[in-house]
Image 1 (cartoon, rainbow, N blue to C red):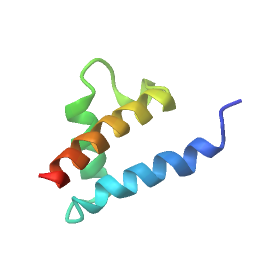
Image 2 (cartoon, helix red, strand yellow):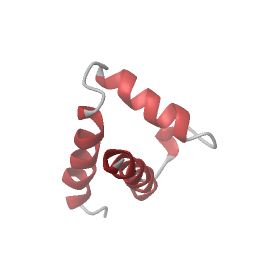
Image 3 (spheres, helix red, strand yellow):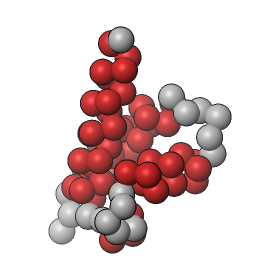
Image 4 (cartoon, rainbow, N blue to C red):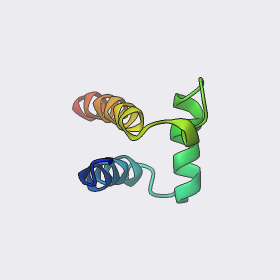
Length: 68
């Protein structure tokens, strides 16, 4: 069984990233993230831990950018 706590954790990360792109609709935002970041296979086939790693990577980039 998958960890139910992952849902809130992943959604919180999405919220942080999406707030920077508030003019985008949700579908646009998701397509921009996973269409440009995930080249090897569609997001449909990604496990949640893989998606979370991508979000963590993007949050790291955001933090570095915010510090500049």
